[in-house]
Each structure stands twice: as structure tokens, then as C-alpha cells.
Length: 114
Length: 113
Image (cartoon, rainbow over all chains, first blue to last red):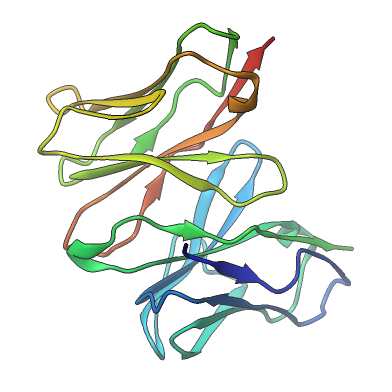
């Protein structure tokens, strides 16, 4: 079974703090993704990475950055947290290419910015 | 501009009846479609997928139908069970393309006992 692990399930941070959300997958997947889910807006892609040290902006990258130093780990960074970044953050991974179009998600990280 | 649309934010059905969740897409380059199920406070879990070379894929109580000419797909759940109550997301991508799944906004299904 694919396992995508998000290290923090629930976080409360202050406005202006730097926030790190960590994600690890154990299936040697090429692709990793960060989404946020908000009521009525569905799943919106923040950033994705198709290889180590490679990253591409998704639909809503503003206010976020990412890091992928190792294949299994993909970090989402909020440089200066704001209240409108209060959300559920979902990490995901996929094998990529013709072999694996299915994306597997972690359990999510609930971030509240106060 | 939404490329994947789930026009019904919510759906309520009786236990034992059929649930039909609909999804429309606008990008004719999409050739692989997936459905995900999400419970509150959990990540989405993969449910079923279909390639554009097929028009139907079945897995137990779940069947996905694809109508390429109408750019429409639907998920049928028969019989519906209270444990099926969740938010269902439709997603699409272009194989060999950017590898990014494009999601709809989701439909909240409630199955009443």
C-alpha cells in the first residue's frame, strides 16, 4: 500500500510566522503535490514536483514555496502565514508517466492561522 | 475557468437506492478520469478510474460511465450505503502531459438510513 505521511495533523500558528508542512511518501513516486481544500472551492493545486529539486507552480502558489531535496520528501513552506491561509493542506504523490496516473493522498494537515 | 465541473454541490439518497454523481469537463485533451472519496478530516482516497478508450468501468458497487462526445462522466453507486456518505471529487488529466490532476469542486453525498 502506498503511504503518504503528513507529519503534522493539526497546527495553530500566528500571523507572520514561518510554517513548514512536511510530507513523506514511501513508494518511490516521482511526482509529489501540495493541495489545499476549502469549502466550496474543492482541491486547489499549490505546487507540484516531478523530480528531486524540481518544482512547478500550481494554480495558487502565492504566499507559498516548496522544497524537494530528497525524492521521498516534499515540504510546503508558508514564508509569512496569514489568516487567509487557514485551510486543510493535502500532500499527494503519484508514480507518474503511463505507469501511474493515480494520485495518493496523505491524511491532511489542518492549519489555523490566528 | 473551470475545466472540471461538478454542478451539484450536494446529493441525498435513501439507503439501498442508486446514487448518481455527475461530472462535466471542457478540455478535450483529458483522457484519464478518476473519482476520489473524502471523509471529513481525512485525505481523499482513490475510488475508481476510467481511461478514454473505455466507456464504462465497474468495481463492485461502483461504476463509472464516460461519454466522450458529451464530455461527461458519472459515478453510480448501487446499492448506496450510509458509509458512502462523503464528498466525492471528480478529477481528470492528460496522460503523457503535465501529470497534474484537475479536480472538480466536489459533491457531498448523504445516504440516509
